[in-house]
Image 1 (tube, rainbow, N blue to C red):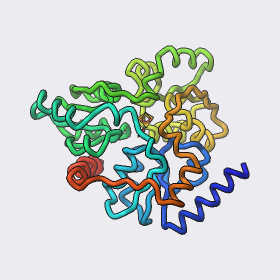
Image 2 (cartoon, protein in one colour):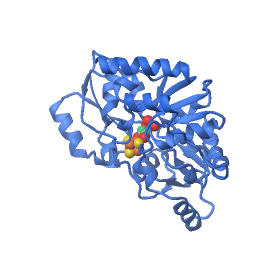
Image 3 (cartoon, rainbow, N blue to C red):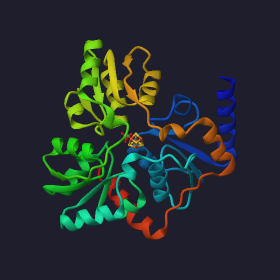
Length: 302
Ligand code: 13P
Ligand code: SF4
């Protein structure tokens, strides 16, 4: 504890010294999420909040695509990612050439790209989406078919809610793809009455046997508003730690898989980011303009 407290104190002082704010994803460990973050949320909330930051420096406690999104929305600000190795299996799964090939194979079909992608892939896209707004985004296009990339499971889960046909790419989240229907069955038999909330990056067979599917912010909202006596969040491990801290009266069953990329955002990495101004995220102008357009189109859909 003294070490953690020392880091938290140092980070608070460094934030003032460097005119910085910390935007943190819901998958941060509690000492980051509750200890030093100024703004927390799901991918959609972080993108929205990035538009309104006043400070000169944003430290993105999350993964690379989130820092890139913050930079695209704030070209004049300095955006720091504490560890450049914080990637994402979804972002790694697709290249700009893959998007061009899909467009060629399906002329005229709009490309909806999950925010979990590089700026180069976003730049080839018509509009981005997150798990928190995917249904709305697809419906806003008014077409009966969309190319939805790169998460094959998210695409199929969202298609099931919209009636829109989706053309997919074989990407998946290394954390959520590991959950199985058997996991849910075991949770239910070990914890009668438990309410199961699954992230839509889980395979459709898992979402089908859950009670509810939604983004990390949707899960948090569900717990806060519906107050189930027992709940299981089928997602990354820190999610239950963070949500349960605000709900000591709710029992959290904790099956979870760790995201190694998110977990690189330790207090010491965040402290070093502020001390040394590392690692600054930049996007080349040729990609920044079209990638920003795809994100801004998403943010305009309410
Ligand atoms: P959301 O927080 O937007 O639900 O995304 C989950 C995720 O896996 C982010 O990388
Ligand atoms: Fe990517 Fe999955 Fe980790 Fe999110 S949880 S950053 S989607 S690998």
